[in-house]
Amino acid sequence: MTIQRREFLQAIGSATLAGSLITYGSSAAAASSGVPAFGFADDRVPMNAANLCPMLSSVSDAHARYAHELDLDLSSANRRRIEAMKEAARSKIAGLLGTSADELAIVRNTSEANNVIVSGLPLAAGDEVVLWDQNHPSNSTSWDVRAARSGIEIRRFSVPTDTGSIDEVVDLFVNAVSDKTKVVSFTHISNITGFRTPVTEICAALRKRKDDVFIHVDGAQTWGAVDINLGQVDCDSFSGSAHKWFMGPREVGLLYVRERHIDDIWPLTVSIPWVVAEDPPQGARKFDAFSQRDDAALASLGDAAAFHEAMTPAGIEKQSAMIANRLRAGLLDLELPFVSTANPLFTSSVIILKAPGENAPRVVNQVFDDSGIITAPVNGFRMSPHVYNTADHVDRVLAAISKSRGLLAQG
Ligand SMILES: Cc1ncc(COP(=O)(O)O)c(C=O)c1O
Image (cartoon, rainbow, N blue to C red; front, side, top):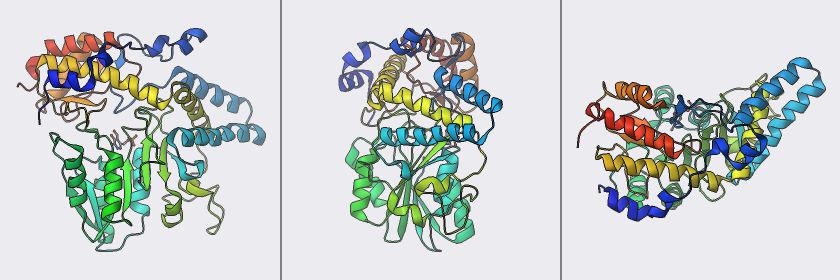
């Protein structure tokens, strides 16, 4: 089903496009402190959240401050004070995601979180793992590597981007499961099409089909972008990166593991604070026992979480969707072919236009030269705006695309 501009606007309600776009660079919180919420220059505007977001200024400042405080005083007491901030961040994030702190590991990125699940789940030769074919390599190739080592069997299935209803998508997931299936692993929001899967409905239907199947959800394009409550989504594990939509410190990631599975999953890395084999760190902390880490970065995760608490995940999702919908409507006006769907059931803030492979990097470069907006050549020409983008950024990128339209695929 191809959705045209008129239906898209009807479906989302044109009021959401006209609605006020808060500029987070001058939001009330930022304005009152006189400090911009983000530090990027107006001729270097990020619109590539699917890959890397700018850190909130409050986070980069806090990171620098904590690192400085450690350099001034490496006494145990001061180190414990900074380390305690990591635990405070864990609790805040648990609150935002509707889970418990004991079910969260603070790892290094989504890739690592996915690989804990891939390598750590107890599976035997012949057990089947079902994968959505849009998964990221860390949740796809990693399974092939495990299959080569252990004889598990991998089965992949597709969801066409023009699938029209939630029921059809759910059926595609359920039909991919066989009696041998032990794991289903998929991405909530695809980085290569922007397709947003109906994760709650999928998990409920998979559970009904086979209640002991382990369900892993890659949330790299979800955490910090979308208001998700892991208490209500019946998955067993979930991964994410703080340096994407969460706008937090770099090289910090998240792995959620439902309490009943923590004991069964093997950790990738065993070090301090794990002391003896019988004495693992509490709960999902057994997956983040990496001994010495960048404690200043981990502490600054709490400052990012404070921003999300203040704006609320629902408020951030609404704002991000508003700017993405404004961009999508402008792109539909240009009548260029999309990789992404415009069906509001499945849209996200990841929007991709078709571009012949060799042209995609050229469009990215030309758009940057013309507008100062940073995009990415991923499966076409990819834009992923977030709360720091404004109506002006959208207008600038649209004008630049219009100029470069000869390099994009044509209708
Ligand atoms: C769906 C998905 N999973 C995993 C990753 C890997 O994220 P990271 O590089 O933070 O490990 C990405 C990165 O773009 C992604 O889009």
